[in-house]
Image (tube, rainbow, N blue to C red; front, side, top):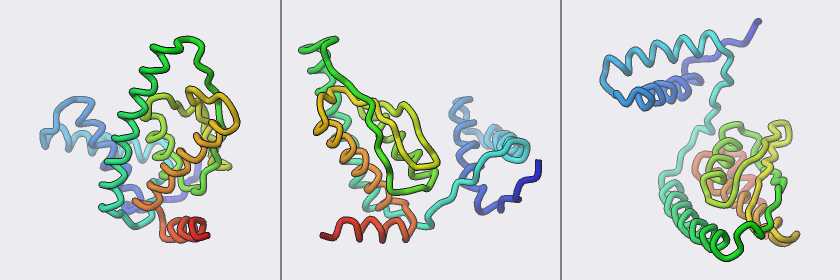
Length: 181
C-alpha cells in the first residue's frame, strides 16, 4: 500500500504519546525502558497506518486551566446527580441517545470532545460519525426534547472550550463569530 510520508514534526506528538503509554503500561519510566518504548513506537508508526495528529499550532494555558477547573466541577456535580437518580428513581430513569453535530472536523478535537464528554458521569459516547463530526451520546435522565437540546448544548460547550485551548486559528475565529450576536 502506498501512503504519503508523514514528516517527523507531524508524527512527533504520536510518537511521544506512544512512549508515555509504553512507560505507563510497564509502570517503568526509566531511560532504558523509555528508549525501548521509543523504538517500539517508531516501529508501530512505520508498520501500521496511523493518521497523523494534526495540531492547530496553538495551546492556551489559561483556557486549559479554567477548562480543567470547570470540568472537575462538572464531574462532581454529575456524580451527585447520578447518585441521586440511582437512589431515588432506580431503574425508572429515562435515557436517550442524542446526536450532537460538532463544529470542528479535526480528529483531535472530535476525539478530545468525545473523551471529555464520556468522563462526565451520566454520559457515554456510543458512536462517532467521522465524516460529519457527529457524536452520538447516551445521556442519562433525558426525558424530552428540551433535555436532549441541553445535552447538545453541554457537549458543544465542551467542544468550544477545547477549541479555545487548542483549536486552529480558523476554528477559533469561527467560534468567536458564532458567539457574536
